[in-house]
Length: 191
Ligand code: HEM
Image 1 (spheres, rainbow, N blue to C red):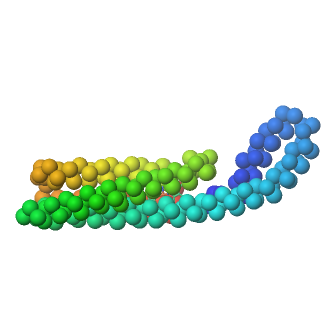
Image 2 (cartoon, rainbow, N blue to C red):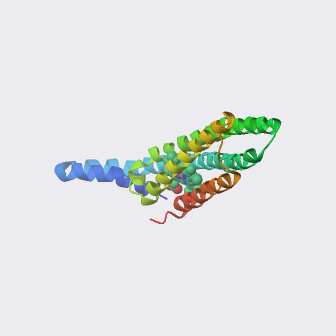
Image 3 (cartoon, protein in one colour):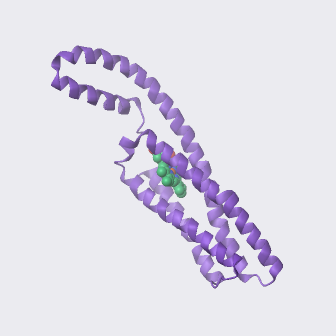
């Protein structure tokens, strides 16, 4: 785990050593500060670790809800494109709009907020992580997919859909692939 007391101690002691190297007479002074800091930092890092775990839990809950919509909305498009009577079409339009506006967009925002919040807590450590850069790139693609869903939804509402149910079946597979790769990157952290 990146956020242990060693990590924070390294950050503070690194700064203290730089100053000590320039002004050796401050050595004892810095030693006393560092010993005091070691205990304060242990407390601080425990609090940080605790808030990180809460943020991670909220992050996971949010992206699970987001993906529920990312999987279900294109499935509704499959059946919507096959619907022949106007009553079914109107019902699909309502279901799609409520799913997109009521669940998908708020959960996407929550995922981003909690993710960025975690980054802000330990940015010096995260900015060097290759897995995170790759993950963020895929998250950008996922946000693009989210907006493509909105565009297709609008085409259905305006009776302009020309895509077949086969297209939507394939379109439905994209978030599956993104989910697999993003979760492996975030959990295994291979590089
Ligand atoms: C802007 C968007 C996102 C940001 C900034 C972000 C950032 C983060 C950060 C900083 C962590 C903590 C990593 C650690 O130190 O263990 C994390 C954890 C995680 N994220 Fe994200 N994330 C984002 C989107 C997503 C999405 C869309 C998914 C799912 C598809 C996801 C899946 C996960 C998982 C499974 C973990 C838990 C990793 C573990 O504890 O082992 N994240 N995320």
